[in-house]
Length: 377
Ligand code: B12
Ligand code: SF4
Ligand code: SF4
Image: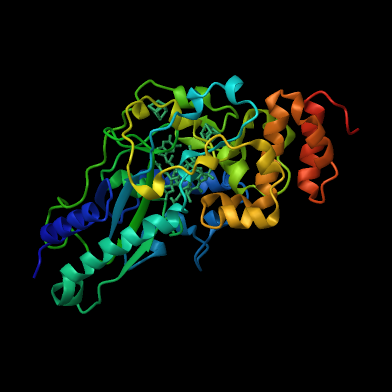
C-alpha cells in the first residue's frame, strides 16, 4: 500500500504536470481565521452574495467549518496557478493617458473563463491521486471508497484559508494569498479528499504544508491605495465598497458616493495587488489561455457602453466578463465616462440617459451631470 508520503509525492508531480505553480495539502481543521467569518457575514460584508451565507440543516454557516459542511473530508489539496502576464499594472498607466478607456482586471483578460481553464488541471491531479490510491487506498482499507471533489470558487470552503494552511502563502492585509516568490496573481482551487495524509504516519502531519509567515510587516500600501476604503481594517474587506464586487457582482444601481472611487474600472479591480511590493517582481506566465485579448486591455468605453446584446454574447461567451451581465458592464462603462473628465462623452451620455435599461439610464444621467452638463433634477 502506498504511504501518505508517496501519495503526496504523486499529487505534487501531477500538479506540476498539470501546469500548476504551487501545490500543498492542508488538514481539515477549524483554523483561527474561520472564526472571523460569521461576524463578517453578520456585519453584512458579503453584500448581496447570498451564496456565501449558505447554511446547513442546523443553521450553521457552511463556509465557517469544512468539518461540518463536508464530514467525510480529511484533507484539502490546494493548487495555484499564476495568471500574471507581461503588461503594465493599472497603477502604472497614468489615468490622464487613458482617460477615455476602461480597465478590466488582469484576471479577466484571457480568452477563457478561469473556471473552465483551471478545472481540467484539477481533474488531472484528481485522476492521478485516484490512480495512485487504486485498491491500495488507505480509505478503502477502512471499508470506504476514496472520495474526492474539485472546486474552483464554488465549494463550501474559503480557499485562501486552505491555501495558507497548505503552505502556499500568507493572507495579506489586502486579504489575498501572497506567495513570497511569485506574488498574488494566483487562481486557487481545491480538491477535497477523504484521505488523511497524516493517518499513515502516526504522530506526524509532515505531508501537510506549513503556513507561511505573514510578511506584510508594517506595510499598509493596499489599505492606503484602495480608492473606496473597502479594506476597512487589515485583513478585512467590506464587499459593499469593493470595486471588484461593485463592477462584477452588484446588480442594479451603484451607490452615488462610491461611483467616483470606481475611476475607470469597468470589471474587477487590481489596485490593492498592483501596489503590493510582493508583486513588484511577479513572474509572467506564457500559458496561452492567460494571454490577454487585445480588446480587453484598456477597452474603449464607448464600445462597452453601447454594446448590443448580440455582441455581448458573442464577445464574452467564454470570458469571465459575462458575469457582470450586459447591463452591469454598460452601467460600469457609463460611470467610468462620468469619472473621465472628458467632455467628448457628453453626447453619448445624453443619448444613454434615454436608454431602455433603467440602470444604464440613471447612471448615464448622473455621469453626464458629473461631467458638468445638468440633465436631470
Ligand atoms: C466572494 C469572493 C470575492 C468577493 C469578496 C472578497 C473577499 N475578500 O472575501 C469579491 C467580489 C469582492 C472578490 C474580489 C476579488 N477576488 Co474573489 N473570491 C471570492 C470567493 C468566491 C469567496 C471568498 C470568501 O469566502 N470570502 C469571505 C471573507 C470573509 O474572506 P476574506 O475576506 O478572504 O477574509 C478572511 C481572512 O482575511 C481572514 N483573516 C485572516 N487574518 C485575519 C486577521 C484579522 C484580524 C481578521 C479580522 C481577519 C483575518 O478572515 C477571513 C475569513 O473569515 C473566493 C473563492 C473561494 N471559494 O474562496 C474568490 C477569491 C478569493 N477571489 C480571488 C480573486 C482573484 C479576486 C480578485 C483579485 C478579482 C479582481 N481582480 O477583481 C478580487 C480581489 C479583492 C480582494 N482584495 O479580495 C481569488 C484569490 C486569489 C488570491 N491570490 O488570493 C479567489 C480565491 C478565487 C480563485 N478561485 O482563485 N472576491
Ligand atoms: S480590489 Fe480594489 S476596491 Fe477592492 S479592496 Fe482592492 S483596491 Fe479596494
Ligand atoms: S500591500 Fe503591503 S500590507 Fe498590503 S498585502 Fe501587500 S505587503 Fe501586505
